[in-house]
Length: 411
Ligand code: SF4
Image 1 (cartoon, rainbow, N blue to C red):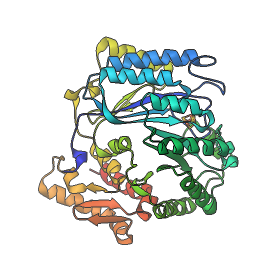
Image 2: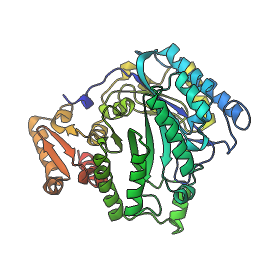
Image 3: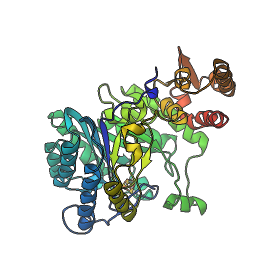
Image 4: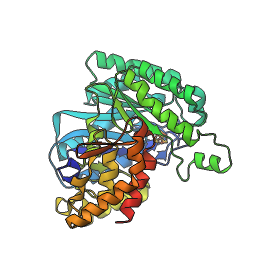
């Protein structure tokens, strides 16, 4: 049976720290901009942070219990605005509530603009063993254009510290994030970004495609005709180039957006694409411990009210094992096709209350819809499994997934 068909006890936590210094021009995450001089312990924004940590503590303590955690991901926002002591406080809440197994992967997202070497040492001391560094681009003009505070020099310095920490055995592994198809990216600029990312010696690279989200500065610029982003054919060419260059450097693509050297795939990332559940805590965070997703309110006051209602009325039903159900079929297909191994479609369809005849005719209808994709090789069959080909199928994944969505809508 495809693992996406199963419901397993969650052993992973995502913790959302919503604070950032300022909002980047492309970002629509649930973030609270606190200003360039914000810091966790004192000064601007510190009271908001302290109040938030108390709310987070309350949310964790009124959540259902579960087995000890094997992965924790502290993301945001910019969690490295918090001091090591504050991150330690949050980890302690998780240790007290669930327990954290020895050898668990504990990731902290860090921002090159506010990365301090002393803080890194203290973060490692409290048990962080994986760092994810938000580089986005190595080009200072682009970084300025997308509203980031850091510059190339900050990235290179941060990477050097991370590499040294890994060499000394103090840090298990680390990763960098890049954004593809930024305004002004062309094929040679993107090739340059990829080469620089390899030169950082990071053992894991996540690459996200720029999407223009509602309410962002980028959306406003696009409406005014002031956003020069690559057209779809250039975007697809860049997306095809990425795995070719990274593969030559020894990286393997284990999911559409994630590449790792052997032994460095993120265990936490794999949870999202495996069908296993995860807990999540914090403003705007989405959990799915038993199959059904639950997104928390995105503003401070609405999140506070929500935590209070959990305390008074008990946890939301989606957080209880009794409310468990496998992921919805559309999600299982879309999530599964992001993975290198693809999906066992017939296995996933077994949960549908169809007769054999209905199943056969639905599969035939889908195959008819995907005929061209199979012919040009953007989808491949491997025994019972089907998967997007790499790089071509993954580069045009949105087009292929939309065929699945039209088919799912017709069911
Ligand atoms: S630092 Fe990250 S989370 Fe914060 S505004 Fe920028 S992109 Fe969004």
